[in-house]
Length: 517
Ligand code: FAE
Image 1: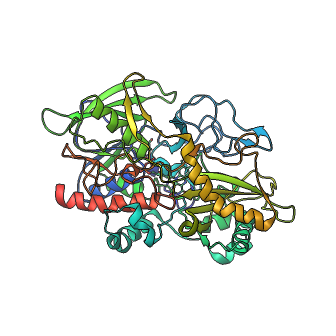
Image 2: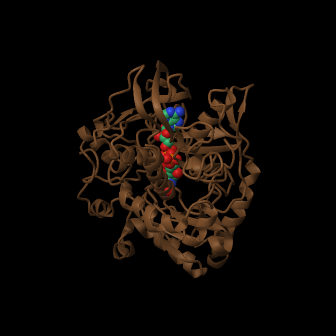
């Protein structure tokens, strides 16, 4: 069986992947198939507009030789990384042993893109980040929203667009009674106990994983995904990715087609109106097998914060889009991501079986600037470790710029800028360690290294709303060009970002359809 019981059939997933023809003329091109792009495609299609989506990653609709579409976290293979010959796992070491290994170069699902001393993890494929992420679907606390998106009406967001996003994404919270007894959440209950004994508020974190499916996994009646350690490289069952939600509904309109393995490389005003868009078609080794030029009436940049910024910064610098303003590339942040582990006492086991889907968090945002998820370490053995991904109120913002010497877009992030995040995370974990008489793990990110401060899962900003664009994502300087992804959000959402990206896209596309189409 491919896909969870709530998944569309393989045939349904494969429909509408008729790749675009050179010379095609289309009303709307969407660059990228993550959250922003999927919202735009669905709503435009429902309004009667034909949409084509170009996605540089694969379709992820065909099983490999093992019968599965996606690889497991415990045994990464050719499917796991985007055009790398060696894995770059977020947790690089365990008990002193390096975990990374050689893999064949392939257009795999997780990109570990190194820019300015930070490794930016991103999903690659039809569904974008929804393919690889933990599905944690968190709406920011209302009182924090003003700092997240200062120019957006909070009432509208909390009354209309957050609820809409949560419904469409299929967000729900774990059954609290099941949480108390499930062996696979022993690690989260230990995390709660330690948080509460130190006086921190504990919260359940909603998710798009199908909790009924997970219960069946625990009962052994369906193929396992979360309980088989699947995360990061895709979930073969249970997780409602964009393929099962927005994109399935977009495709069902019959007005949306998708070209996987098509990377957009240029956008410029066309003499006849609209935009000339250049694309490269890739094979699974990453080689360019064809270049194509198409004409689109309007173009939505939804390539993710990094993808959208790399395009816009280069197109402004090389004169293809000269009207873009000086805010392009500015205001990029890492959502303050930092990871750490704690070593528990032998009487506090966290469980050999750990659900790969986190469901618990420690909220110390107001007092200490940190919101920490109690994350799994699904190794299959008892580790006595508690593991956390913290989102912190890191104030630093970097800028993308074009470097003519290297011929690349670069990011001026500084490795020392993670220090405020560490300090904020320590506001939680120093206190817990002191209370519990425990210490930090030093074996997860290298030899004697406590903090996973070299990475982010949450790139945000670079084409910030109401700065690089108007207050609805219309790029200044070129009518008919829009940004509709995480690039709009100025660097931090106080929680995991995809619900906010989705809700903002819902708000913006409603306005754009009403006013521009
Ligand atoms: P995104 O989903 O990244 O989609 C952009 C798409 O554009 C990708 O499919 C790209 O391959 C494609 N693309 C890029 N450049 C081009 C080009 N030139 N031509 C054609 N296509 C292109 O953008 N967030 C949460 O809220 N909860 C979580 O639990 C969570 N866990 C995460 C775990 C991991 C390991 C990672 C990497 C991320 C996680 N995130 C999580 C972050 C979340 O997935 C991310 O914020 C969103 O996916 C960003 O959505 P966008 O629409 O901006």
